[in-house]
Length: 261
Image (tube, rainbow, N blue to C red; front, side, top):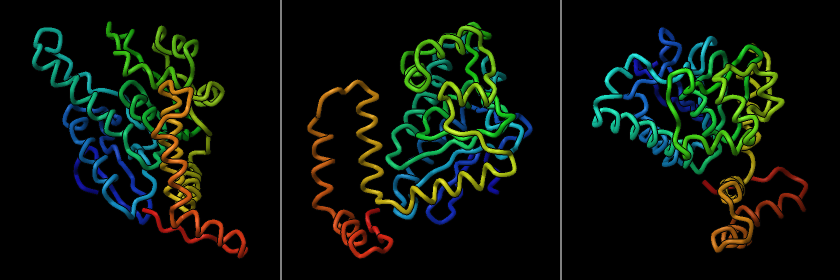
């Protein structure tokens, strides 16, 4: 516990980004958004951290979204609106650009900005009672193309329209069916399942994991032919210690001990 409404907690190879504002159901203030680039940079810089998980401190909510109490004045004060917009954009970009695998562990309410944070993650697990949605249509707002792209990339245009036009909260079973979450785990098991999944990632070559994340990101961004970056990432693997160790471990019928960090 740090007293901060959002903070980073490290546990060996796993880092937890904890949204700790239970009295507001994890509502995201501008200050919380502004803290995300620093948190992302710390995850990126620590060689011990191999996987990061974002969670709400309460079983009731991952995050209910932006703190609506801060919205007053955004329609008339351009400077205030620009600062708020920049804080959200920079926070989401920072999470998206983490080179290491990220997981959202979603319990309870996950709406608006909270759902946007979950969408920055590579993997999303939900508990059965979790609900996810993005409701700008209920506030008379519209999102930018950058804000909308991750949702469309994950669920496709039709499901994105269904969610956005209605602003409804999607239950976990439907979220699983449309690909919004990767798995639904019982509430009393979701943290264990998340830890186990993260440990499986951490045992693998981190060069491979990060290179594959980057290449998948290039594909999601529209690349449909080999790029210089994707080719270099693939070819450089052959010169790496992890490749030599992986082959030696396979031939020796033993678990590999990868060293890339």
